[in-house]
Length: 165
Image (cartoon, rainbow, N blue to C red; front, side, top):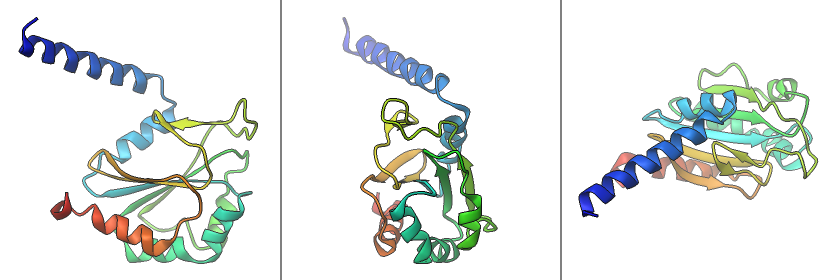
């Protein structure tokens, strides 16, 4: 097979595979996929009201300050593994009214290993909290280990500047 034809077939098969994957996504995954297409930075943060590390992030005031300091960065909090949406907890720590903040609830509230949500937009989610940083429809960083350090988050957001890429 000629190299050009082989390359075209590979591209078409990969494109179709991506389309099939996104067709099987939940509405919340498709909504977030649209948000991360932005040329600006979008942060997707998975959290739960019962999670000690998530609560420590909120109590520190780090998320509220980060939102205020970064009005062009869209921050999407997705409540996972809980039937409660956590809106009251977020409000208590000043999150919610910001124009660059969006709060969503994942439809699968299970915390049981055999039924819990383990992926989102085709990517593994294994820990809560987890923080993903996107720009121009590309995941630039994935912090899947737990509680965020806000000076590190700020540095990673700054590092997505197009002059560095």
